[in-house]
Amino acid sequence: MPQPVEGEALLELVWKRLVPLYPDAKPLLEYRDCFELLCAVVLSAQCTDDMVNKVTPALFARWPDAASMAAAELDELEAVVRPTGFYRNKARNLKASAAILAERHGGSPPGTIEELVELPGVGRKTANLVASACAGLPGIIADTHVIRLCARLSLVPKADPVLVERRIAELAPSARWTAISHALNRHGKFVCTARKPDCTSCVMADACPSFGSFQKKDRA
Image 1 (cartoon, helix red, strand yellow):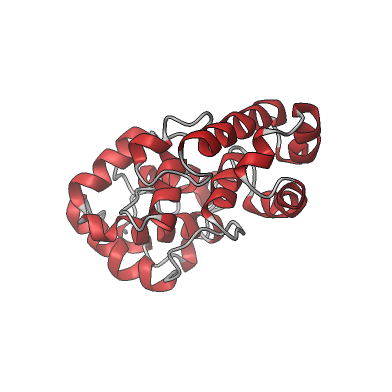
Image 2 (cartoon, rainbow, N blue to C red):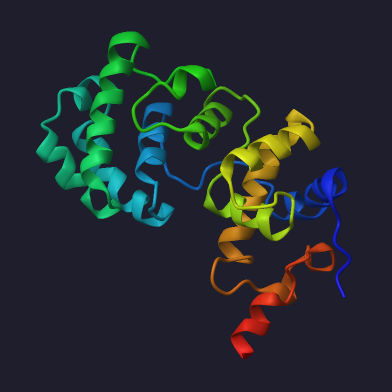
């Protein structure tokens, strides 16, 4: 039977076991600069990275910078980003954010979490991802995969991004935040998936209180 590990010990285990498996602590989204990354992360809400990566080449070919995207016709922008879902809100947020970037920040995303979250459509997950990738700041990127793993490992009592960010900040040194976030994200994408987690090949299995529970449901 697994012996659940809690608190700092659990995050130490994540650091020792998961981070070496996924050492590339960078976004899976494709981008050439920080403006493109910001747009791609906004589009990734309720959408896969693969789909976003299919859409963004045409998006950035047509509107390669903040000034051009701010001047885009909204219906044309909607048509390009439509495959990512929720395209009306996303197009509106992209256009509004681009205008702010062009007018106030020289066309590039600002370098602080506080400034980033003021942009339309940018929450703390997006802000942490952009700030960590572009400004080198420590980032706790509480996306759907990270939240799911933290709940399954009982790091948090429920799947909540605020609790996840707060808990990791309390228990892990800031220098580890970005690497831990990306490692949890990759493990959630490829092993501890939402519907059929592969518990038998998971390096965290002996410390996970959720080990085997999904297989038991499948057999029921």
